[in-house]
Image (tube, rainbow, N blue to C red):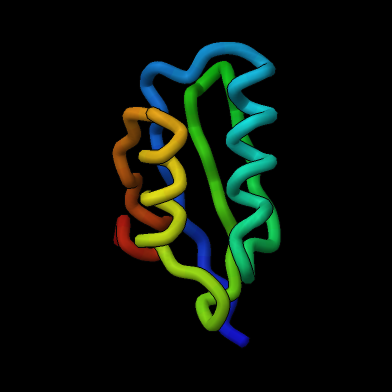
Length: 79
């Protein structure tokens, strides 16, 4: 099992209802462990088991929800 994280900026995220829908839909993906949405900063963090899911599946789900998003660099990529 390899736990990875993916970080996204959601520039047009609106309200608690949309944040709840994002969490619900991403949590349905196999291998997704946690989904954190910060409405104020428009940030999304997803921790997942890479043997069950990947960034492509996460991004496809965000697209199906009609969300604009930009992938953020992981902390280890910033160095």
